[in-house]
Length: 237
Ligand SMILES: *Cc1c(COP(=O)(O)O)cnc(C)c1O
Image (tube, rainbow, N blue to C red; front, top):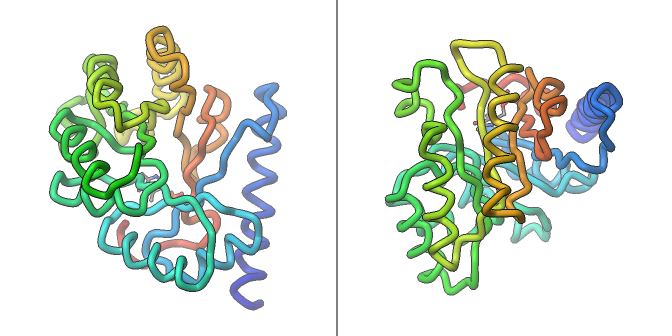
């Protein structure tokens, strides 16, 4: 099987899982955006995905993402770039050049760096999500990324106050130390609280290859799927 057919077969299987999860949850699959996480895979795979109709592409490292975005653009690929990884302040300027949605805003210093990056990049605005840490042991947050739940609403206000970062919702990764369902249920509660003051912050980015069904049952609007689409990664990503 050639690579495009291989990805097409995986894509059909993932779309089927999303459809089944939506049926069980009484949701419309049209509410779910599939973000294909292409970290460690080449720009050619992004072009295959785009040809198959997947236009939302996720990356977690700036250096790799910047190069891939440039390669895809020069090959005529038209996709939306989602930055889903932990972000260092000194990479914010670079990410602001190519990202369409940054999922991983988790501290005030990063809000400022990204807002400065947007201005330096000369773009009017950048869409962002606040990442929530769902680990039971919050001391894992530093290593795993995400703002402690208790700080999410104030961080969201900080984002909105920049004027150039558009607060679009929340992102989370399932906890390492607990089952995903109660964690995604907590996330749904935080998302609801967020929408009281920020009614347009409607995105909930949750769920990966192993737990997308649980995320959809608790209201995810975006699922971030890597290995189920592209294969098991050789490197840890
Ligand atoms: C790698 C990654 C994914 C995709 O993980 P898979 O288990 O391969 O589907 C999703 N979200 C983030 C933040 C990631 O880093």
